[in-house]
Length: 573
Image 1 (cartoon, rainbow, N blue to C red):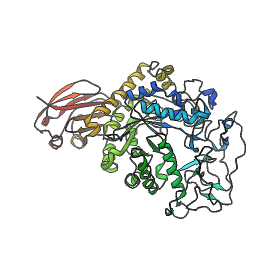
Image 2: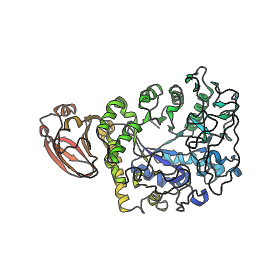
Image 3: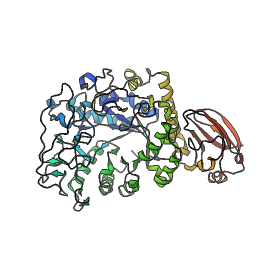
Image 4: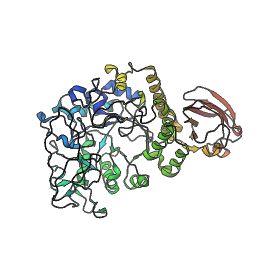
């Protein structure tokens, strides 16, 4: 396998336990057997081939590694988890309880669960898809214990000195002489047996809470890993000799890479020192040079650091582009924010910013907490895919307008697809169509929405200008012209020697626009074209039309509300 020739990869996030679940019970706090659970085997050749045809290059299987759960697998030699330190009946995939094992929920035959995962990796590769899984480096489940670790591997915390709050070679942070206290009001679902939870001394909680009793709003079900940073003493760094946690995490990454995993989405990467990443990523790439590392990161001031010192391949573009586009989709944003993002946050490394409108942490677009209408994503999705040459991500079901409307369990009714409980996703089940993976049960509106995404991905995957081209922002040249709404329209060029595109987006949800787009002489010349030439502009996306224009007179366009025009520019022969 080789590195992508372009950074324009398309990642499809699958919440693995929900993907193939065809049960429709959807009982509040339903058990695994009541509500059902998807399996590795459900993601079969048909499913993977369909995703490849849809335009996907990389599949991120979320929730693969074994995590804490209220479901009892003790019959298979897997220790039972205390429900007081688990969120939801199924549990959070970010509370890892064994870094060397996979989630038994996902196996048809629990003793052969790792073989079933390995077969999924093999199927994915056969479909020409790369496999990404989570790396959760900042914290583990409170009852972390590996029962299948390779010979010679020591568990996190096994050799810690628990009498001190910090030691550079400890894996955890301790609160000596204090016992852990479960937060108030931790919900125990009906039918789940509760029993006292003991932890003494208490360990610091995953979101940097150094208190014996975290709150229910903290990541109370996790414990913070120690990378040699003394948080209680001004965050002093102790990286020489190499901390034990660094070595253990390197071995874990190598273990999964050896199984054929092609990359890692690194959870809350900025809560782990960049020095660790700058050491571990080259260590992994020495053995597996084509691995990719994606950082979940929310602090633009640290972007440069984690890319260039931390050696990440790609970073989340959440607080920049996602937040700007979200405001526009909700009807109250300004397109000037898009210009600010590329100018101030990611200008010289935009090819390494992962763009998205949904993932497991964010509200679904169609939910009442966000845009309320999945079609309001059209201009925002086009901008996410075509603004620069960097990667794009979709969350499973985004393309069929998944709209959560009821509480599933621990997280309540929050406009998200549950991370913590067993559930069926009706809109996605309509696409799966009983295992045909052909969208046979989708409504006409859902089919239209999915076609928009498929057409956009096709353009993204085949357009030389979008995959490899330069970017030219035309906002500055158009703000003062009649019919051009500078707050709701966004216009730009993407161009290579082979292809020149003009992209015009109208984010106004109620009003269309009729205007003449000004393309300054400098822009024509930057594309290698004459500023006094005649050109044909052929619409190549949603509204087939061909215009003939004289460069100095601009481009007259009409746009419907909430729409996009993409024109390919060619010289008149």
